[in-house]
Amino acid sequence: RILNEECHSLPAGEIGEIAVSSNQAMIGYWMAPELTSATIRDKWVRTRDMGYIDEHGYLFLVDRKSDMIISGGFNIYPREVEEVLYQHPAVLEAAVIGVPDEVWVESVRACVVLKPEHSATGEELIEFCKERLASYKKPRSIEFLESLPKNPTGKVVRRVLRDPYWQGRERKI
Image 1 (tube, one colour):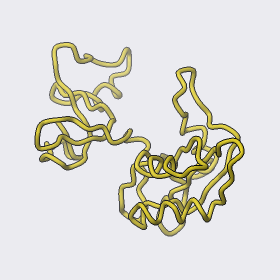
Image 2 (cartoon, helix red, strand yellow):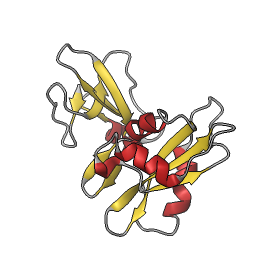
Image 3 (cartoon, one colour):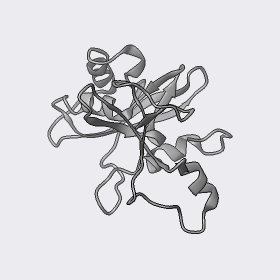
Image 4 (cartoon, rainbow, N blue to C red):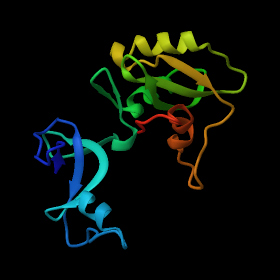
């Protein structure tokens, strides 16, 4: 099922949190009753993954709930912005994060690794995204890095990129 914030099922095509229920689903977190009760409700495990089910019943994964950026009241899924950045011929890797913004609460920042022997400016990449995304989804800033932080399985660790911007702030993602 796909659920909204109030745990109600959403119709086909609407993005929400993916929830699963089966005899093989987890029964809880070891010695963590609060986390268990926040994750499992009425035998449904909330996966913290965002997705939707199409009109044919196929499930599509959109992004992790914890990675979602809320800017000016709009939900922005980093993966969508990253997929556009990967279309640029100079981009080798990209990770999109939400950073504090006094007006919009969060703004989109892209952390980019360029391919060897290629170059691009931040303005060029922002314009590239602007031509392919809704205006509110385009990055407001670009940070060029030599490499992206990854865990042992090769997955980008967004927290490492995001945390320095949120240090010392009351609200954190």
